[in-house]
Length: 111
Picture 1 (cartoon, rainbow, N blue to C red):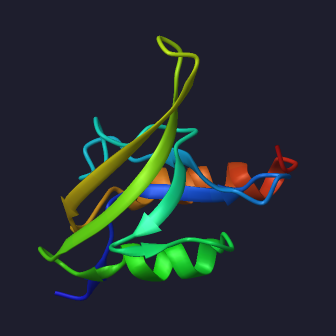
Picture 2 (cartoon, helix red, strand yellow; picture 1 turned 30 degrees about the vertical axis):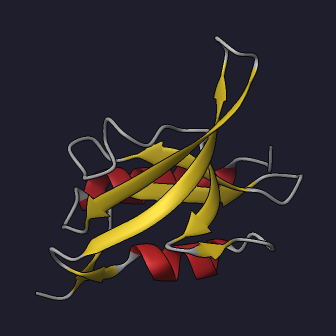
């Protein structure tokens, strides 16, 4: 079966935050996680120093297993951030989207 994820591509902002850059269409994260979401917890572990490799290593696992994490998302209704918790299954995603998003991320400057 191999190791799989939830279908997100991450980047680090100029502020040092680990942010969702894009979400693969049809992936477990699609419809839940949004571009711009900031990772704050992996399971019960708070992310004190954002590290894309650390977060990515926690998102990847055995197909069908569940990954729990929290993100901070800007909520324009309250003009502030909300903390959202998710528990999503890991599964295979569209690698064409991941490759295209990775190339775009490598070619764009940090935000």
